[in-house]
Length: 80
Image 1 (cartoon, rainbow, N blue to C red):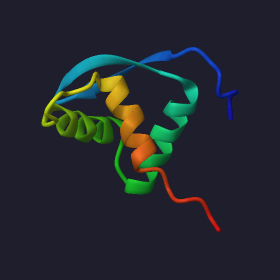
Image 2 (cartoon, rainbow, N blue to C red; image 1 turned 135 degrees about the vertical axis):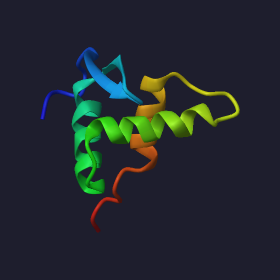
Image 3 (tube, rainbow, N blue to C red; image 1 turned 30 degrees about the vertical axis):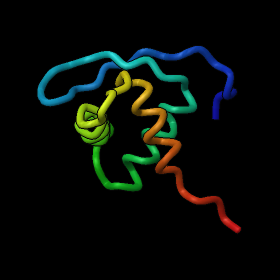
């Protein structure tokens, strides 16, 4: 696992047939891949779902911020 204090890394994803770039810190990319694996969907599909949810918000955040918030809100509970 990379150090948590790392600058964002830009990667391309496809949402509704359109490519877009998202910049997230490596820790969040790791969390996103793990969440997609837990849900049994590709990363692009999970990002698309998060994007749909954020667009419905009263004041939609940016996509990268929405992904970070979704990951924290949906993180698995720690054991114990």
